[in-house]
Image 1 (cartoon, rainbow, N blue to C red):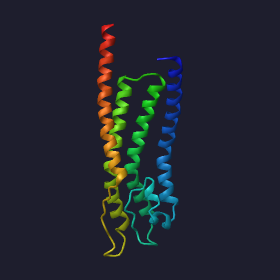
Image 2 (cartoon, rainbow, N blue to C red):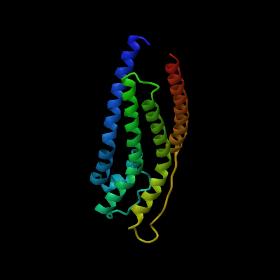
Image 3 (cartoon, rainbow, N blue to C red):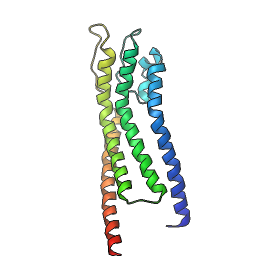
Length: 186
């Protein structure tokens, strides 16, 4: 590897590690801000669901209590926590890359865990949406409570991408084994 390529890899990896760290910190702050500071109109509009809040928010106007805000935040943190887990391990992976460690046990493990987190996030979002619909409509008048599971393109893409990344992780593990075997021969 040339000096220029090494320098680029180190620089880009450090920047991306920082971006992942910022994202890790922003997830709970943004979710908390949406739930604890957001207006009823915003939460009911569906705009929040475009970000990290699962679909299924359906409380009646005037019934957004502090307990319901807390429940909404906690349910949102299911996929949010998985997103944080993914970002944490992606930051660890970029940390390895910034030290020019590509096929080490740490880098491969970080990539595998990242891939698993992406896959689980795709599965967790519809489940969290079901919980969200139950929690936010529980206090509604009879006949206005519901349970709804929604899976869209983003969830299906996350599941597919998670499986693809897991296969790449298997390839990386094989590359790690070959690298270790080559080092033992020398």
